[in-house]
Length: 91
Image (cartoon, rainbow, N blue to C red; front, side, top):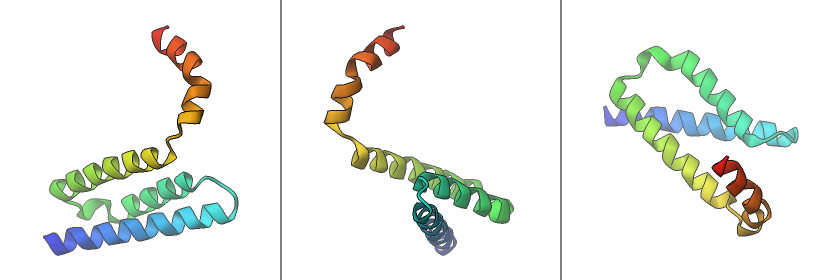
């Protein structure tokens, strides 16, 4: 079971990398490539994924998303929109 999960993970990461790279080459955001890769893999292999594997991959996706957000975090950008964000959050 662990080998199968590892192979799914490897396939997902490879597809996401290739999708992001292809879209970056045509000057589009790589996130769109990641989403398209996930959509294609989901359609192709959706029936063979157990709930345990799906749970593991969803938690991994959240961790990778938060990691990516941490890499993109900029205090300068936050300071620029801080006032508007606070007003929008209160309203």
